[in-house]
Length: 95
Image (cartoon, rainbow, N blue to C red):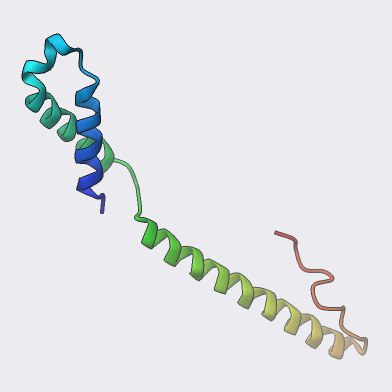
């Protein structure tokens, strides 16, 4: 969800850029700026910072789990082949 306070602030700042001779309709322009900004931003596929941080944490946990599973798999494969497993992280892809 887009924070409407940010849109209001941006619309206010845009309306202050209007030349002094055109400021008679400043309130109306500010409302128009706000409506245009809301319409434009609603078409974008945006997420909140909180949603982004949650997904980033999920990705980090998933990456850690994948690396752990890759190490376990290497250990099992080494046991099956009768060799010693590679040291931790030797053949893991670098990020």
